[in-house]
Image 1 (cartoon, helix red, strand yellow):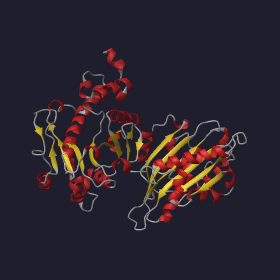
Image 2 (spheres, rainbow, N blue to C red; image 1 turned 90 degrees about the vertical axis):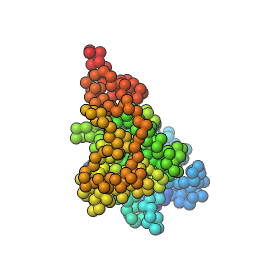
Image 3 (cartoon, rainbow, N blue to C red; image 1 turned 90 degrees about the horizontal axis):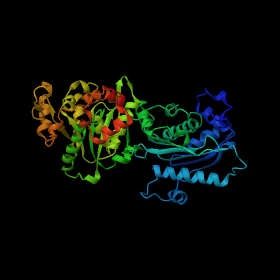
Image 4 (cartoon, rainbow, N blue to C red; image 1 turned 180 degrees about the vertical axis):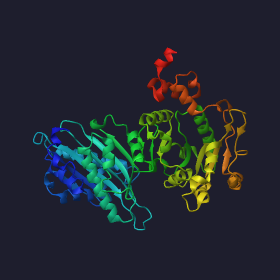
Length: 483
């Protein structure tokens, strides 16, 4: 820990919000500004109430009026205020003022920070519970560049005052963690929920940047959000950066492809290509307003009980390199995926899957926790004209092809399956590549780890090259040479 933020170990194990704020206030070097829009000045209030705030708070402000806010921070292209772009402008503007108004020669040991949030709490009709962006830009050493932590939250409480209070607690946790827990970002994430229950707040996006976080992969931080139960799903774009699901999915037609992708094979890409072609033939589905999401569930990430982060990163890198948007979720059932997408879009949805996945969907054991059982689940799954694009299965022994016409579900589910089949909810992928029918990712993975030949032909070219160059999934070039 840098010498500039040592000397107050008596506070190390004090968990209260007041104690956290007081520890910051009593540190003579931490000094900065608070800019809070949309939910009161709830974070800075905790620092004022803790005492000794005069040495910490340079300025606090809240530009509630839109005209004043625009005059200070500028007008956003989309005319919106609760956005990541707005948060970034707030952090940049306030830090620039800090540097202009504080003489470095006079205050050589000061650690500058600016904390900002732009938030919309629950509306009067209680239809929208509200959300917001929260961030801090700060120094750990006075001679070092700034670090930054930004996150997006969704409120779950049904009262504006409760939401404001929760936001204030989160703000203190973030500032405290930024200064005293930055050396362990995974722990810092968990500490954000100190004195906050999971049913009060959801954090669905977080990003770390700056010299202290050079070795932090934000995709791994996204994984932690799902793993810790802070959110149900996270997404990242082909460039590997975390993205807000609401922004990516908003008013889009969504096609989802679930799998382990360990590794992503030519079969996966054949399913993607053909299902997307079928999806685009649906009414009101236009390519420029359509997105395909490759989904990996948390259970698929657990290879031997615990999540293997190295294995996760390998899958993520390969999918991103193929230009795909990736979602990590804790959804076991498909209907939960559809419900999740429905939060952000009212457009058409499709699911691409293999025969075995569809058979599993018609297994009653997955729906025993629902009062309406499988009928309730299917009501949620197939509403809004959702369609399943089915990739056939080839029997390795007999060579028989199974599709929607001859697949077998449990006898009790036979009539239910017929209902969805004959109403056009299940669509067979016809133009599949028959030469790929014998490719299975688990067999490819075994070939890679055992140093066998020929697995490269089963994967997209760039995928095979990345596995070799980056030694993913246990690939060992020396083992190959010895053979």
